[in-house]
Structures are given as C-alpha cells and as structure tokens.
Image (tube, rainbow, N blue to C red; front, side, top):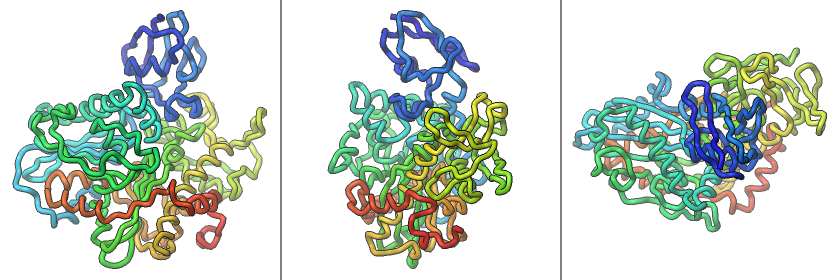
Length: 537
C-alpha cells in the first residue's frame, strides 16, 4: 500500500491509500478526483496529464509503487465539471430561443397541476436542468454542469464498456445521479422535496444508466436497447433527492443511438408539424443525431463524430471550457491566426467550434490541401523530427497558459476529417434511403452544445454540412431540455413525443452496406464529389 495525495490550485488536497500496481487514474476515480480521460484510460488521448515530482505524466499510464507520493492536478483537468460552456438557459440568447419554442408549443395546454417540476437534459458530456412552476410554467431556476461520467470516457461506447465491468453500472449511475443531478437540484432549490414531477431526456445509453439498466446490448448486434419506453418511475426508486412519490418520466428512445433527447428535441424543433417541404434536424453533442422529414414521415440516425468535435481525438483538443479557442480566422497572406478564447485568458487548447473554424480557414487559405495535408512552410509550420508529421501552430508556448504550443497536426486533421465525414455521410445515407438529394432540404435546424458555436459557412466549406442556402440554417438551442420542459407541463405533449417516436424510422448506420462508401467519399475537403459543394471554391 502507498498513500497518494492529490493537490490542487484551488481546493484542499485529497489523500487516499492505493494498491501497488494501480494507475493514478484508477486511484483518482476511487478518491472522486476529477481527471478528464476521454479514452477511458487506454493511453490514446493523452489528456490525463498530471504533475509528479516536477514531471508531466499520464495518470492512466503511471502506476503506484510502494512510495508515498504527491500528485498535482492541473486546473483544466476538472474544468468539465463546472466551467464548461453549455447549451443551457444561462444567457439571453438561449432563453430567447427557449421562449420562442415554448410559444410554438402552446397547443399543448398546461395540465391543471401545482407544485414544482424538474426538467433535465442528460447529455453524454453536459447536463442541463430547470425547475419549473407547474401551475404557471415559469422557469424558477436553472443550472448546468459537466456529466461526472466523463471520467469514464468521452463517448457512449466507453461508458457501455465501463458499465459492463464488475460494479461499473453502479459507478456510472452514481456519477449521474449522486454526483451530477443531485448537486444541480440542491443548487437550484433549498426545498427539493417540493418537486413533485420530473422529466428526463437523454440518449439511449444515458437513459439506461440513469434507470440503472445494463446498456451492453446497445453496442452488440442486433443493436437493440433493453427498453425503448419505460413506465414512469417514482423518485425513491432512482435515488433522486426530491419528493419520493414524484413521478419521473423518461422521454422514449428510438434506437440504440437515438434516444429521448432526440424524441424530446424533435418535439421542440417542430419538424413533425411541417406540412410542406422537408427539414433536417441535427443535434451535435458528443454524438451527432439527425432527423429528416416533415409531418408525413421522419427518418433518423446517429453518427459517432463527437470525440473529435469536442477535442477528444485532437492533440490540443479540449472541451468548451475556460482556455479553449472557440473561433478563429487566418490571414491568407501571412497565415497569421486571430482567435477568441473562452474566458478571455491565454489559450490552453481548442474546442469543437474552434476546430471547425481553424480547419476551414486552413483550407481556405491553402495551408492544407483537400486531403488534410499541410502544403505550405513558414514560422507557424512545424515538422516532427520523429516522424515528419507537420503541424500548424495557432499559439506558441510563450503565449499560452500551459507553456506548450497549441497546434493542429496532420494526424489531428485526419481524425477531424473522418469526424466531419461521418456527419455528412450520415446525412447522405439517410437521404439516399428515400431517394432524395440535399436539394430536398428546405431548412436545417441545428441544436446541441457544439451547434451553439458553429459557423455555418465554415461547416459547409469543410463538407460537414450540406451546401444549401445559408439562410436555411438556424440554431434552435437545447431542444432536448425544451422538449423535456413541454413534457413536464403537459400530458398531451408526452403523448405527442410518443407519437413522434412511433413515426420515426431508425437507420442503423453500422448495418447499412452503403454507409461505408458514403463515408469514404466524404473523407476529403470538402468531398470527393465537388458537385455536392458548388459554393466552395
């Protein structure tokens, strides 16, 4: 045994006894010390850096010996818990969109009930919640935080794998219920026992883990979840610190990777109400979920693009927290970048919207070619002595908060192009299923955390979103939370969400033989078929 002390810049140290041979990441998890590890500790993301005896090491690769040690945890390691930029109701833009959606859903009359209600959007990365007066519909309080499950991996596949380990499901359930939702409830209300109704909207994996149901069948053929819809729970069954007799409803799932966040979100998007023309609804978070159709039919699918878009597969990538570059332009003559940083300080890394902007600008200015290879030289282009891989430097170490360069390498570009290709090929596969082209799209409704910061011109330039008139693009906020709010107030809204679920045709991309062809074709800037992107020169 050895004593491991974790130290921080802004809180008291934590000491725990550890077994020889355990990794520092495992020990940190037992001590409830937050260390971001998008790859769930397999050593590939290199994000779990800590300081040991003055040296930077990976927590997932460093094992405990018989020596007592002190490990310094950098502030950015736990930024996902409380300082992540979230599509919640914390600013006037999001509130305005939320109000507009609720006005559009006025046909669902409020039930004649009183008391306090709780609406929660459980995202893979972030969780947003609102307390609502059930009689008036007024939002009393709102709060958001990072999903504490993040330390078990960035995406749902890592979470499913973790849940399958001995005790894993309980760890993940505790992370969402006890460590994430409970603190949000307590932050919003000093009398949580007054909460008499709750609605939860999450993807299929999040719904299963929240309900304490093993999610392992989701990733195994034939990719069937344990449940699509679930009878209401009582709060006491779930361990929520609200009125124990409160009904807790889950928005229904459609398929393995399209869940209640999309059924609730589709309600809020009003796509189901369109009587003419077709709309594409896209929710970009850790996963990319898509719905296409109108009041006659709806097709839906999901693609795994989030880890790259949220920085998980990028060497300098990070979540949208303080220190992340979130927007970027590059001078075409000098190749000098201009960027904005969340929080306004020195950059630490780059988040999803900043990655989209940077790659689009690198392509526009000729820094990279359509294959994502760096095609220029200069002060901002580095070449690795080890393998010859080139990188473009957005910020040199002397100008960053860490002392390290913030850069985008050709390996990063390859990862990102695959991620954006996954999104566009999913859109094409869904349209091909009904013999439509992108010309059929008359509106593009973009929701989710990443969606809030996307520059639509840049997303089209790199071939992530279809090349349609930019006036057709519209950001619609956190539709998952907006839909959960509507369900909270109205049983008829709940019935409509169930109807939406029944009317959706789910396409499992991993089983679609044509999807891989579409994906390969989309792994190019903007695409191997230039005719699909006529406005990109």
